[in-house]
Image 1 (spheres, rainbow, N blue to C red):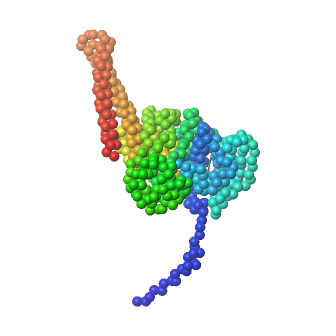
Image 2 (cartoon, helix red, strand yellow):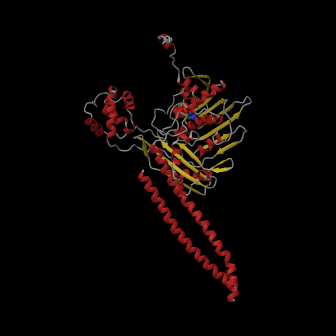
Image 3 (tube, protein in one colour):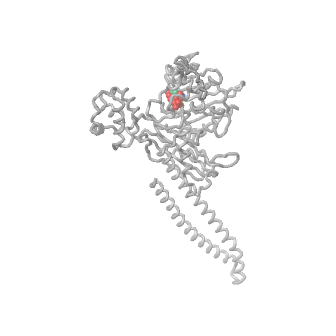
Length: 548
Ligand SMILES: Nc1ncnc2c1ncn2[C@@H]1O[C@H](COP(=O)(O)OP(=O)(O)OP(=O)(O)O)[C@@H](O)[C@H]1O
Ligand SMILES: [Mg+2]
């Protein structure tokens, strides 16, 4: 056998030469699809989504009714110019660079508050996308309501993920909010089902306290008017619940804590952690000293604490920091927009997922009227998916909402062919931490507890629609029955008149009375049967929920 000659192995120097560091901006520059920048229509919708969700968060933070302006212009060179403006908190001059010119920087990531934004990437990446596709800077105007306005042009230094600010100016004027002007290529404006138009329509639907104006490239002005004048409650920060904490979280929090002892760190930085609970844990793991400084907490100790936490009974997490849209507002919004023949809205009680993260589900089904989507001239069912009132327009296939909708036995609700019916199914997931499937934040991870709650909520609504459909069907049958009776009354009266010689009109009146009595009796019987059927449906659904 001849020996195969192996090539020499790479040297240490050659291997080391290949190691390079790069910034988060460089990473997303190469992986734009991860943030929703794939396809020309979707990319434009993503830009608007990032700007508008920040505007709504900022209006909530400021405690004002949001006034949002969006303008899309088609420029002669084929670029698209986007202008957005809001009346939120604004951003202080010294933080403009971090807010708009640095990825993974912002005011939301570290706070346990119900917000649309979570990551500190959204708007900064839109700024970078503008730069990457047109080479232009983004213009930002900001005011925090202190009679000063700040304007600048900015770009992102990709290598260092840091802002580059030029053309700064400051002047005095009464202004509060943010105005952004940026240019893009590789984007298109239209009114398709994944468009900016549809995104704003859905935003208006779940945010009836908001006024949105859209100026389209052809200068058409569309206003989604404010339907309610109450400012939603301001989101409040909560502390983490012990059951939702991992060893790594515990270590990180302990090492950053200013508490003197591990015991006081636990009681002061977690919700539901009483001094008695610390004692209970301490007796179960006597080798951990809870009087030591939290900075000295080791991984094995933290792991023991977390494992013991899982074995104890805890009061459920606080749920009052969650702000749903509310049944009456959803009802108003859907009635306004869809004018459905039947509508059922439900707000479920708060639940927890992953042991300690609270969430709640609001859902509605609208049937008939303008409900459903018109796709190629055909009416189809539509699922209006939301997380913290933000529309989820893409990635439906991997979303908890669709998993819930698909797992329902629609036959049971007389909606066998539901996908081809005039139905709008509305689902909003409310949580301080929405478990998105990706950094693009367009789908909710199908956690068991979340899917189950969504399913129960939709089933509650479907039951009501089924009752309505039954009633409609019965009314139609009764009408047909009546028509048949009355059709023959004339002929029967004529025959009787020939036999008895009695006046035809008297005979007709008498026969009509008999027919009315008979149909009323049959209708009453129908109603009884109907009631029994609904009760069966309720019982069945309840049993199913209990079984699960
Ligand atoms: N319109 C605005 N009004 C007030 N503050 C804003 C506005 N837009 C952005 N900001 C500030 O800039 C920060 C960064 O925004 P960005 O969209 O990049 O991240 P985020 O909203 O925190 O999280 P996400 O990546 O999930 O959107 C925000 O946290 C906020 O403090
Ligand atoms: Mg954001």
